[in-house]
Length: 349
Image: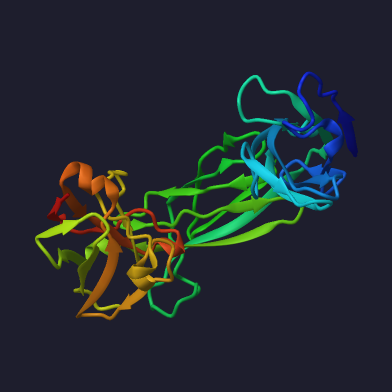
């Protein structure tokens, strides 16, 4: 359902700011009814009724029974609508309570300042149907290294905890059977992030399991820690830089193990310091944060020349630093990573 409401906008000359009649506003969910574990999506449509001039405004959304929401653009930001044109903003959201309907209200403001007159207000609603979900899975270690689960590779006696769902909660702990199998049945639908413990020196990935009306089958592969066999070192190519210089970093990765390490990428500056390189730019190639990663062959050393501009924060601190974690992040392995040394250099004004 979509309902649009017009709020009078008085006391300000039309020449100074757009008026309520400048725009038409509507909010629409993509479905009239959602399962309680569904991902919610919809659109906000802003039409500029003035054929002669572009106009700007500010979008202020308010969700009801939505735990989180995200707009493609314009969420608490200014938007510009071309003369006589229409701007459509997509949004996504999560349901908070499976027993209540959802709503999205959007105010269109003339200014980001508070208080600011509301030009228009619109809202959309949708119903929610309570749903449960089920899943069975296998926790395993790929003993023969063929990249898949084979009979006999299941890990028995490990603990699996499902956290998530709508509403968010922790399910009772599960223990894998002699074949590494586990199952949950008729639990609240939604996104779950199973965590695994009791697998000795192995680590398990962080995965997102979306449970709904259709049963899910999950394969969870535990692996050796990357840090067991990967050594990482970093070196900057100069002793002194100025802000904006392109710093070259030599990354040396040594795999002392008997198996190739695939999908190795980096996460740098986990502390969020202003003087550290981030490892996120294209100059880091496939190693960059969110990149596809590189393969470090067994019993070998590889070096990479990566680049990144020295950040303004380094000028304030008088130094630039780089320290990174290296791991199989793309496969969901957040722990067991290799941590490099800290390389540093002076930064002058």
